[in-house]
Amino acid sequence: MTEGFAAVPNWIIRDPSISRGAVSVFMALASRSGPGGIHPSQATLARELEVSERSVRRWLAELEERGLIQRVARRANSRGKGNGLPDGYTLHPNGKTQEGPAMGVRSVPKRPATGDVATGHSLQATPLIEEEPVKKNPGESDRTEELFEKFYEVYPRKVGKVDARKAFAKAARSTPAQYIVEGAARFAADPNLPEKQYIPHPSSWLNKGRWDDEPLPQRAESAPQRGYVDDMDWAR
Image 1: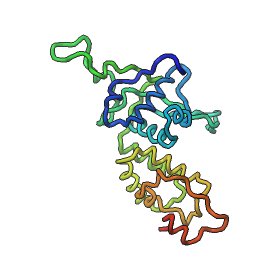
Image 2: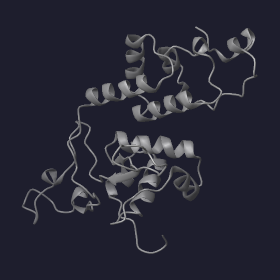
Image 3: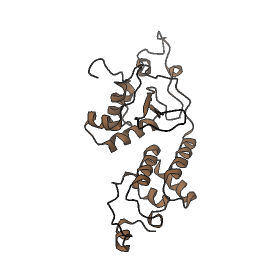
Image 4: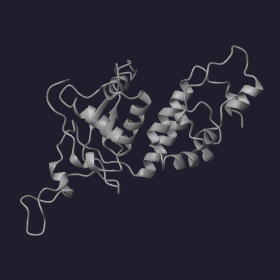
């Protein structure tokens, strides 16, 4: 798409707590806003921004955590089976405040200005790009618990759930929780995943920040040697 323009709110561009990479991804998504929907693949976004797909996944997770985008799975049929199509996205340029609720029209000063309220508030210039109404965001603790359950569901070894929950909550304070879940899903789907007894406990995997690891090295056909396992720190 080479014609037209992308509407990106000034506050998103100027907010220092939003990474420049996340802003770039939001701009790329906004450039596709329209009746046809927003559904570029992560590979397409990575190619346009000249970055890795891993970086795109991290920035998408950051935008989701900030409430700036909502991922919408595209289904093949009524049975809910996927068809390989990339996810769609709904943009919520009002995002949410640090207190949690969406930054909406009610928080914007009225027009015209009164004697003590100036016009030109940054939120007043925020263009509405949503393709569906903004839904109320759940509390942060509820959201973290919800994502933890997704993490535990996809993680390939179910052990020490109480410790895993604590480790997940701690990790989610510095890393978008959705990004951690996606890292666990990639780990579980790795074709070189070792036998279950050599897979680290979920709490250990979380405490060591393994969600951003490279794919596992190809293993030999025979059972892993003890020295190899120790080197990879898979055994507890």
